[in-house]
Length: 292
Figure 1: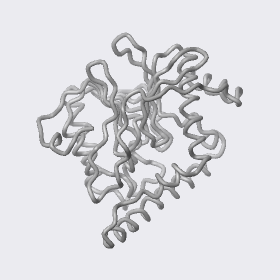
Figure 2: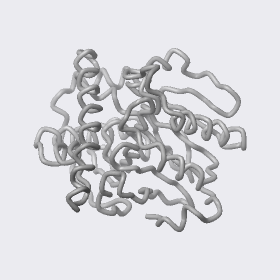
Figure 3: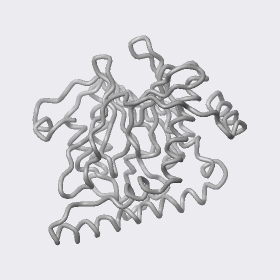
Figure 4: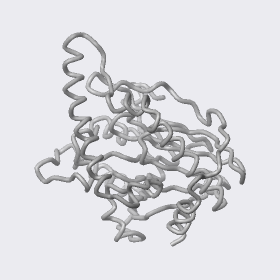
């Protein structure tokens, strides 16, 4: 984890950076720390792994100047030779019609495979794993609006909490961490991503979507797979960095205006055995989706 002093130092050179789930155009988007982070790095490759612009909830009346500054900073990085890959997610799925098109150093794709130090790394957002997304998109959109409302409520709660001299809380994080079904969903997501990557012969899989930054090895019946998730810029303020043949989770310093920082996390913590998927038909559909 990099402290606040690193922000003021000269830009760090990084081989590859992954960010996801920024949700520009929503009130929960943390543009100030994101801009600080982007201005502190000089990556060779920047991967925007889905839900960067929240087109689902986009409203003309809410598009602050800071949100446009994020777009301009990314375009500036591309103009300075950073190769930018924009991987489409569910909240910006309208861009999927432009997949495999490029504007200068900016490339729009639905998924991406890169070879890093003789290892094949598979990048995609992860919404393909959502049964709700596959069959009830209207329900998923209602859930997204509810989540954004919860973030707005959280800002009010934190203002009151600070008034009484107490620290910030993240309502959505507490809900996700304490509801068994949410924990089960995250575990199923990670295991499914790992098994699918192993089936396709990759060494690692990098996702976003679930707002849960992570780096760890998962053992499947087809071998061990490195699973990575870049987290988000609403609650966790996190990114993935690859440099000197190592992956790390970057966590931005949290100020009083942001949610509390999650506990520090080290690379490749723990190994879990993966269970056979119960929904084999859904797994086949996913394989077909990615091969199309």
